[in-house]
Image 1 (tube, one colour):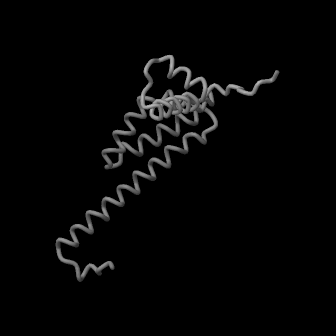
Image 2 (image 1 turned 30 degrees about the horizontal axis):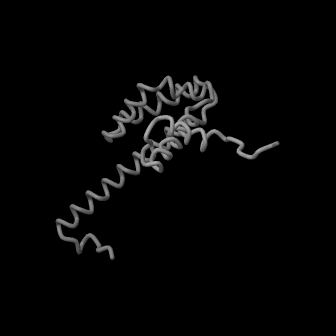
Image 3 (image 1 turned 30 degrees about the vertical axis):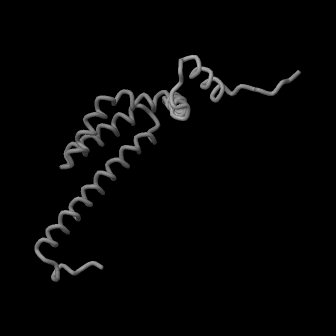
Length: 134
């Protein structure tokens, strides 16, 4: 049960203020993240670029060091982010395929040679029709 601030010791008040401040920073960082995701609702690369620049300025003016670091990293990849709006393609399929290969490698506890791994990849991901049509 939560004590009222009048009944808290100085140590408890200090800890409460630390938690409260941390939660506020976390909420602000989450809001920045959610705002960034809105870039993918932009209709043109130009809109996306203007949106990104406004988002970036907002984040670097904040006092959340980790978000500033994220923003600077994303700025280095701004053109790639804007290209997603322009070309409407991602590497999601490749990432999904790589994930399925990694899963096979984990399940197989390693393969003795590459050919065995290749056969497993083709078998499970090749969408082979194993039913005879003769």
